[in-house]
Length: 289
Ligand SMILES: Nc1ncnc2c1ncn2[C@@H]1O[C@H](COP(=O)(O)OP(=O)(O)OP(=O)(O)O)[C@@H](O)[C@H]1O
Image 1 (spheres, rainbow, N blue to C red):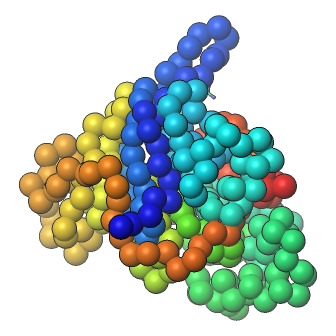
Image 2 (tube, helix red, strand yellow):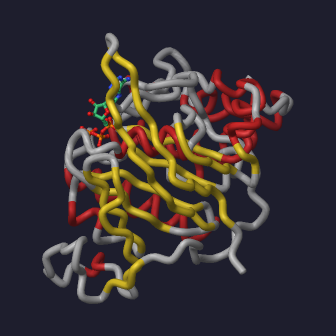
Image 3 (cartoon, helix red, strand yellow):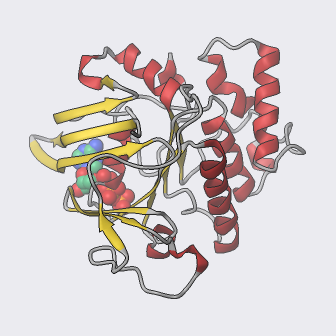
């Protein structure tokens, strides 16, 4: 039996804006299992980012039930939710959101501060994680001394340094040229395969979505399809993406599948609670404390 990393049951999120209710999510149910690779696709305004913020515990649903790492978020205080987030979720955003005057290694080490890890061990773990994303030679560089692709690698290292169960990536290649974006996607896929972290990635791009084994299409605040494909299309066989009626797709059942996560349970770089701006990111993982 696979273990759910995150489970949403009939979850809704309605924003109240100037006395007007904006229903961004209108009853969404899904389970993210350990080690899965899931693409979330849908038109602008369909609720993708809202869904990611909920799955990551950056925001709370206004209806339904949301369980992260086995804990029902409705039962948690804000500090408890922040701690759970730090222990369970890593975030990567389109706009990187690194601290600008801080070196790569210190950016990556930051989530460990909120875990109470000592300075030397923080640096060692951050340096090792930067090595894993191919930046072992850039430890002392500040973000403005790094290329866009390198900055996103630093953000990925920061998200994974605490060994989270789930990595939520919201348009992670949106600010990158296609070759750099491809390299970042390959890195995310490699880390997903190697470490067993579940990868949930929002994308506008059907070709990117087609690389994932499981594809969730969101429209008007609802899940329109949730399909598992035996053969991801990353081999580039040229078939058009047909999310609503993919011939090789099976409808998704309530529980997920995928390799087990080793032990997981450490936090990612998370941000403040509540709505983030478009591509809004964690900055300092201050939500953890
Ligand atoms: N803080 C907020 N207050 C009011 N309405 C909001 C807020 N955040 C999002 N919305 C609305 O909720 C809906 C879903 O927004 P969301 O950002 O989740 O969509 P999205 O699918 O991620 O869009 P995009 O692809 O453009 O990033 C939209 O209609 C949006 O205008």
